[in-house]
Image (cartoon, rainbow, N blue to C red; front, top):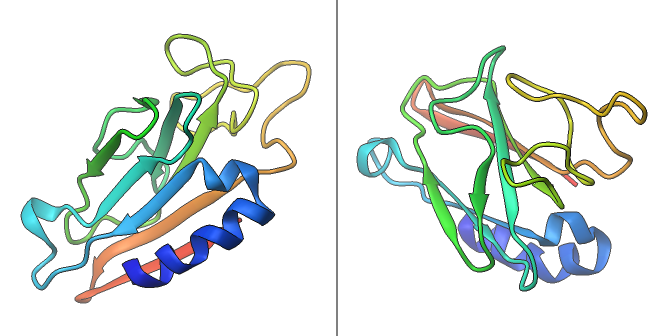
Length: 143
């Protein structure tokens, strides 16, 4: 799966600039990976930081919300078996704590939307997954 996502990178760079800022790599291993870590998100943007927001079903996921990644930096997210209904998305051009973003301010647990322009900008790239559901990881990438 990591190879498939890697092969999509040139297409993402041409087709979805917001998506190109985030390189998703799934680290799949028997038994759920090291300590439940199957997902690494890397900031592939060379010029600016991004923040990663996420949710698991109707609540925040187990990792910090609005996690800041500087250019080239990555983070391994905690994805234990049974973590279902997750959604991860990049936010860019935010204030110092990852709020009031120009791109990706999509609402969700602990997130606020701009009172004038609302939530979900026209380009909204998400990675969704359920991990270890009956021994299988399910993923969906929206570009």
